[in-house]
Length: 303
Image 1 (cartoon, rainbow, N blue to C red):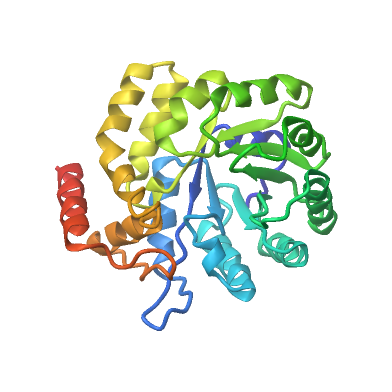
Image 2 (cartoon, rainbow, N blue to C red):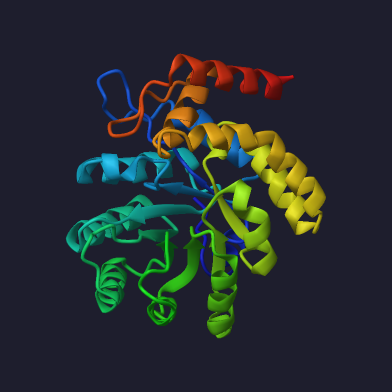
């Protein structure tokens, strides 16, 4: 099994971080077999990093022992071909336990979810990440920031935690991102656009060379083509490719974004790679109209 450390891991984070679905069987238990073809397609297409226990993985719908199971299943499927990031979060003790489990599974790094707790002190977030780092058995950390409410000074403090090697920026604020990149330039962090393909061009333009993707579960070649266009500074081609997959992302954004994973899993079912249903409070199944729109889109992609 290949071990990704140092420059190799840092370089991979400048690419696509594909967020894997969590496959469930008919009894709503995690099953490993359906994930293998998803991983094989992504690796074969050239996706640079794969992530278990991200939001497309239904992280907040998993019990703690299921999240541990998922990172082991993902590691077995990936088999060291690309770096695997293990998502950690929720209570600090759960996050620390999952950090240790992810290290045992063979994850190359951890992705630390921003705490969704309604009572979050900026200095408390710094302590939260520091305590996860202490439990991580030497694994580097990638911060997952969905907003900048804790303030730029606190974000900079987080970026200066020695174990932090990157930031997944999931806020539609490219100018704020540019300021954070400027403030932390001496650390040479990997900045990853956390809003998938649609926001990749503006975030790439200010310095986020990588981006996340749930599309890679279904059509990884499209994600790789978009990243390649951005690397060539061919923004016109990137925007054309994004425009063609935009209806897929618009379907995912329906129902207050509650169809996000639903559309991905429904597409996998249609392809014959059934990874099961999504769990409440996610929407399941798609409405008749949504399903028709999805099937028309996927049929067009196959032509």
